[in-house]
Length: 194
Image (cartoon, rainbow, N blue to C red; front, side, top):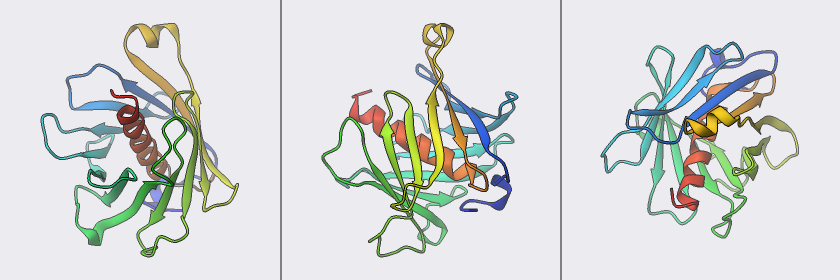
């Protein structure tokens, strides 16, 4: 199920470690590693910018996706584009809340670019961000494509980092899953007033 690139699909489950630095003044507060600690992705958030976009970079700083929030939407609408583009021709998917009235456990619907009418979602996300126990499903089904698990340690709390892992199921694009996690984190930070 290549959504971003077939190179980000594996025929076996992929375990990703995600570290979110809570207090940071650098331009990257997310680091995504494999089980051996090798850096796979990082997220660049523009400092002091009016633009509400994040850029998902691979380990060699190549832009993979641009995640752009639509601030005028009542449904936390995000659009995700290939590379550094924000051109509609490079749209990969759109994400929005299923309903405006969800604060504690937001349900998110994902519509791939070819699904222009957005009547039926291609993926949906349910769970609790606070508990770091979100699940990503294919369509409106119960078929799981990825799951997030909390991984707090005393050290991570002391040094201002939030650690969790994500299990991406076989043949699912893990760059796509990471982009969803970044958006979910941003929505949670807005809901909690961070």
